Every structure is written in C-alpha cells, then in structure tokens.
Length: 376
Image 1 (tube, rainbow, N blue to C red):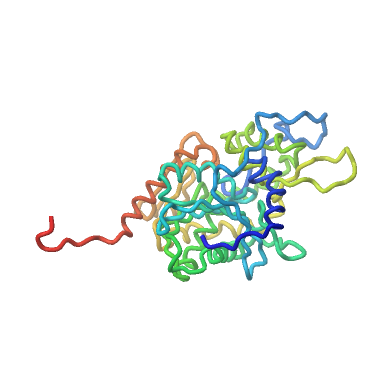
Image 2 (image 1 turned 90 degrees about the horizontal axis):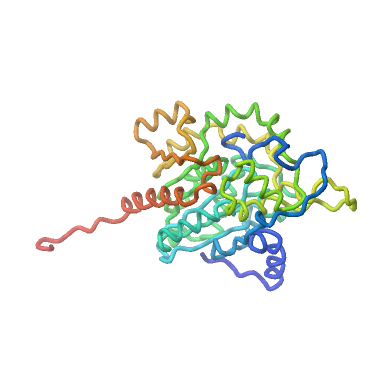
C-alpha cells in the first residue's frame, strides 16, 4: 500500500490518541448496530455508586492485530479516514477489505484479521476502515457532516480504496467483506469499484438480510430507549457488551469496544452522568435506516462477482434470497452459537469460511496453463 508517511507531529498526536483507544491501552436486532439491552444489565440512567473498573475487561491494544494503523486523507470527501492494514506477503495477493456495521468500528475485525492472516500464512491481507462518524475517522470540515445515507457511505468507500491504491492496475485483488450496514455498503460499491478497473474476486455479507432488517425498523426506537447512554469507564462498556451477549467473545470485545466510545465533554461537575459516551449514537442514524437496507437483496444477487452470505441463523432469508439460494446464485454459510457480531464471537470459524470462499474463487480467476504436445 503506497501511503505518505505521517509527519513527526502527526505521529506524536496519533500515539497520544492511541494511548486511549485503538492501538494504545485499548486494544436487537439484526442489521443495525449494537443492540439494545435492558438497563439492569448496566449503564442505568438512575445513577448508583461508581464501581472501580474491572481489570478482566481492560482494553487490549489493536497493535498486535494489524501491521499498520494509518490516517488516510480522502480527497473530495472531506475525510481523514482511519485505516487498519496488514498487507499480503505477495504484492499480487488478495486483500480482504472490511466495512463495519452501524455503531461499530474498524477494530471489530481485529480478531478476524489475525485469524485470516495466520491461517493463510500471509497469502491474504486484511484492511479494515472506520467509516465517517465512526471510530477514529474525522471530518476535515469545521463541523462534522452528519449524513450517513447509503449513497454517501458507498462514495466514501470507493474513494478510500482509490486513496489507498491510486492505480487499479497495480492494486491487489479485492475481496469485500461487510457486516450488517457495512454489507449493504460493500454490495452497492461493487459496480463502482469494478468500473474503476479494480479486480473484485467476491463479496461476503455478514449477518444482514433485507427483509429481516426492514421488519425490525418499527421496533428500533423502543429498543434504543432501553439502551445505556454511556458508562463510567471503558472497562464497564466492555463488560456490558460481554455480559449482555452483544459480543460473546470477551477478548475481541476488549479490542473492539473501546474504539466505539469517546470521553464525555467536560461539564465541570463530578456528578456528570457518564464518563464515556457512544461515538455514534444509533438514534441519530434513524433517518438512514430504511435506505441502508431497501434493495439490498437485489443488489447482492445482481453483483457481478462471487457472493457469500454468512448468517448466525437460517431462519432469516427473505423470499428473494430464498429463490436466489435455490438457483445457486450465492453461497450460504451458517455459524452456530453466535450472535449478530458473529465475526467477533467466533473469528476462527468465520475465517475458515472466508478462506475457503477465497481459495475457490482465487482458483477460478487463475489462468489455466495449456500443455504443449508431448508435455507430461
């Protein structure tokens, strides 16, 4: 990946910020972000005595999961985008490019990335991004653009790829992976990326189905009313995610959860409601929910590349996908014993599924060697 190095000042700022989140001391309903859980699980608005942080849920640095953490200037989108990247050992290898769901961030793929690189012995690389209004991605404007329409997210994603690999001819083969809302983004981005000359060997959509997501939308506001507004410590936020089974893998949660919270603005009062707030409050994304998922099944089935859908259960295929599956238009894989964030809950099994998908389609794109007469 050909990216300009950070200046000494930027490096110092990055190291300071990482000491509080991604690479320093840090580490419902299907189709949206972290689900709502009854308040008795933690983070109640009725304030109780603050408890000391539980060291069992202390943040884990993301530094051991990716080779690089970079801020990429995305020209034309007014974004300074956080990118986590581990390149493949072969410059002509394949890179899995990952887009998180609403409310999550790029380190949601940290545990999966380490499994993918390790199992493939470096044959594949992994890149994971923080979308706008998520994680460590920042707006370069004075006021952050609140717009999270699907078209905006798709444009961002395409421009990020072009900022990282300016020349399509020398870029690696890309396998696009999207969780929840991110699945809709990568699916709709495929035609744009291919038109720009990049090689896309496949798309993998993680635990989102249009019909189920649309059906859930009328219930989302009542569920969000029961969701904690914030936490007294990052450890408490991690513990809440694990104990409510939002993320069932405590180790992965210790890497990914810190990046989806920000320190609360200073109020000068020791009785401030919470020390840490959600980086992306899901209620603020409500105007975009319908657009994220409407038309997703048709876009997925019409994508001109190999298609993989990984679900946490088989009961959520809508009619369009059921017909597509019967016609053999995509590969379906089901991961047992996991929740919505299945790539964090069981990164090893999801990695095995993705690598099998990659190997099958990588062989299909490889040129066939034709033997000459008399050659054994």
